[in-house]
Length: 198
Image (cartoon, rainbow, N blue to C red):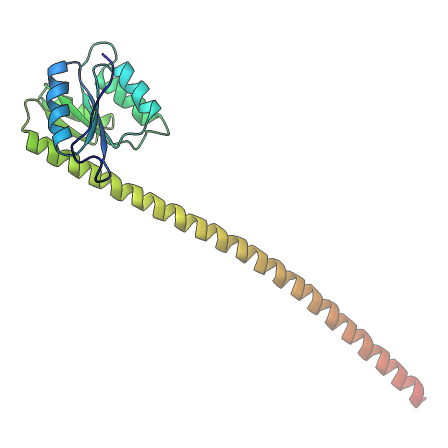
């Protein structure tokens, strides 16, 4: 199955956040895709892990809804690949699964899922979790930008400090030469004064 794009009606009026939904059930894909599209998300659908990884590598998504159990490459393998790739390691991922046992949730979270939702789920709960995950990712992104800006300012200040230290060293060397010259002149004056007194 090729990727399907389901834009919302108001996609042209505001910045649209994109969500990749990965599930081997076409019914689940279309239902979630339609509902999220109605809520204003640009939705891309994929029914297998290999295609999902290709889509993620080829374009940026704001969030991935990932089915845990799929034939071929499992959701956990997809998640591990996402977290192991520098360009996608911070991509928000919500794991969706029919397995409701706590061990499955713990395993998904340990592999790096930002959240975990068991099927069947209330769509409003899923939507709230998506929003919370996206908001947290936006705050993290803002924080990273602030840290990068602060690092740049610190680096600039370190360069300035290095330049100031160099200028100070030059000034100290100049002062030492000046003191030495003054001492030589004083010695010469004393010598000449002693000579003229004799």
